Amino acid sequence: MVGGSQTGDDGAKAPSAEQPGHPTAEPWPLWEVFVRSSRGLSHVHAGSLHAPDADMAVRNARDLYTRRNEGVSLWVVPASAIITSDPDAKGQFFESPQGKDYRHATYYTKSEGVKHL
Amino acid sequence: MSESNASATRITPGNALRPEDIAASDVRPSEAVAEYALRLGDDALILAQRLGWWISRAPELEEDVALGNIALDQIGHARSFLTYAARAWDKTEDDLAYFRGEDEFRSTHLVEQPNGDFARTIARQLVVSQYQFALYSRLVSSSDATLAAIAAKAVKEVDYHRDHARQWVLRLALGTEESRRRMIEGLILTWPYVGELFEDDSLVKELEGTAVLPSSLRESFDAEIHGLFAEADLEVPEVPAAVGGGRRGEHSEHLGYLLAEMQVLAREHPGATW
Image (tube, rainbow over all chains, first blue to last red; front, side, top):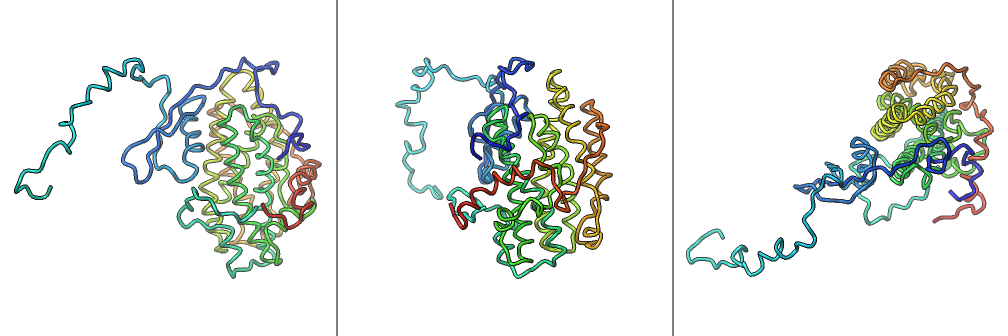
């Protein structure tokens, strides 16, 4: 549909902050969405969305992230409830495994005579 | 309504009946069944056209998508019903959607009503989705296998539309003073058009066992509305019924403008594909 719609109903105005009588519009809170696909074993972060509450967040997630049969289960989590690692603490958090090759299976050589490996 | 299925990301779900399958089948509906399919298809088509207006205009982006999804579901139902009806007259779904005049449309007055504000659209959505849910729930048992198959696919989708509308009625009615005022106003503007949905006429009586008698849906509709309104602290508006006649092709002034916009491209460029 094009702009300047003739059938677009004069009364139709989305609520906005400028509109008199409408309470100051605060943006809806942000939610993080996790989708488990039919073949997936765990929920995977798919993106985020805005919704007024948890029930509507699940519905919005269904509309936004499972339109093409992507999922069989959804989680939504308030973005504010997610605790992140400190981006400035990269060193002590994530560099420790470097050089610790023995934490990988490929470090080990197969002993003679071991079957089914 | 093009037949483009060439999307790399599309996963055709299960064995859901598609309009293309109906067009390709040998089943031809009788004149009466086609007339009935036209009614259901026109309700869905006109509602979809109305809802499409909201894209980019809803209160939040997420709601643009929600209403857009609902509109697309309705287009899907319209395509199936119209494709089926069109077979009776050796026409196509596009012939029926784009090249009929206002008095040839069989939709009810409710679906052509203006969108108004978001609350009014939600009020209309509530009524339409509750009605369609009750209707399709029963149409799955129709003696006409094609109508039953279309209903079987549609009922799952309108169940979601119904949930969407009910959630918003609760939130608007129990939200702020302003949202509650708008919800009540939307229901008052919508309710005059409820009665027409449940009117029987000679066609549906003739099609007993194939069509669903509209009057038989009223009880479950009322029960679901009363349950929701009790929760939302709302009352059924006491307003006089509007003059109906949509099933006979008698429409309000709104439909002509809506059709002009919906049909202009196909009429200016007949046979155009995109």
